[in-house]
Length: 165
Image (tube, rainbow, N blue to C red; front, side):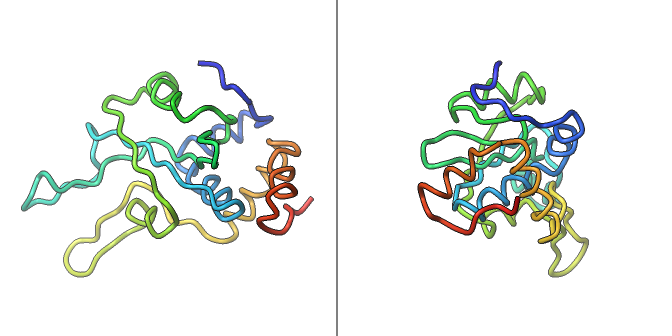
């Protein structure tokens, strides 16, 4: 599937942001523009199942996109219509049982991030914690791979300060 608006990402960028850090890039776009986060999961491969209730699971996360107000999904490889995500996931990531979860903010996304435990064994979630430093790095990648696209959005929407150049 061709990406309608490809990015200028290097192979190293694509490898980094399709191998466990896609959420950092999506969160950077979310913080900048207020875009929703779209978590693509594969329910055939859960990362955790409740020993006392096998229906209570945390699915594996395949990828996280940021979705703009036009319904386009953004990731390290570029922008595509949200309706094309399912085909993209089957083709690029070999997803077995596609599901998606729309998160309005980082609080919603936190279900999938880090390690959780009130008591007992900790539950390691599918996405690693990210720091503000990780998001600064992601912002610098965004500026490089989407030349002028996010900056133009800031200028027309006036949402936040410009990306550092």
